[in-house]
Image 1 (tube, helix red, strand yellow):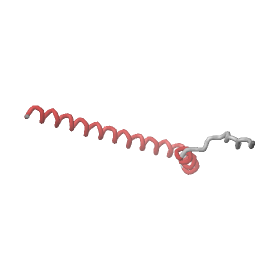
Image 2: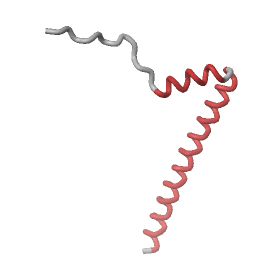
Image 3: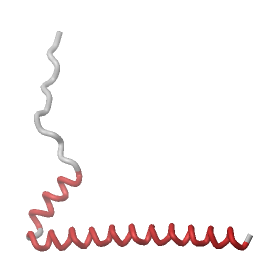
Length: 68
């Protein structure tokens, strides 16, 4: 009977980990922080836009219910 192959002791890095490693090599700390802050702003803007669309749907539903 053969022994099982050895188990890897280190985890395979994710794509995010790999991108952050490249980013740390290419960008200085301040630039990295600025880029991450900008991305956080983009995500927040998308969330607010989604909330506005949902609010508009609710208002239209209420409006059409009153006129029916």
